[in-house]
Image (cartoon, rainbow, N blue to C red; front, side, top):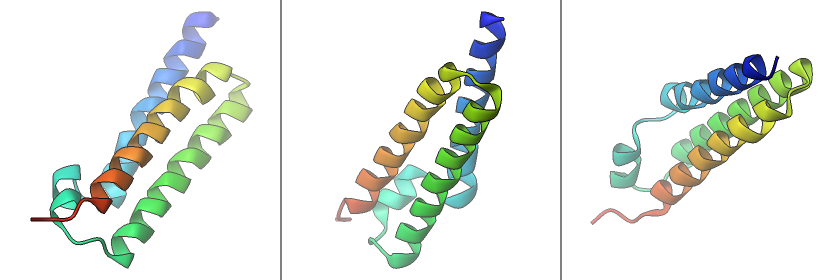
Length: 90
């Protein structure tokens, strides 16, 4: 049972990069562009979508592992994209 919860947590955590990849360009591209309203909106959409997906799967499965592991991945991606968007291109 414990292995199944961990496998579910890893699977949900692997979906987070897919959500960000579908909503936003790669980090290097974000870092090289000017901060724009469209980029900020896409970033917020990706963050809310991934957080909602993590929360929904965590609640439905009753697995704290999903919330902790996949939530940490979602938070990491949100911070990486936020920092990349704030870099001023040279």
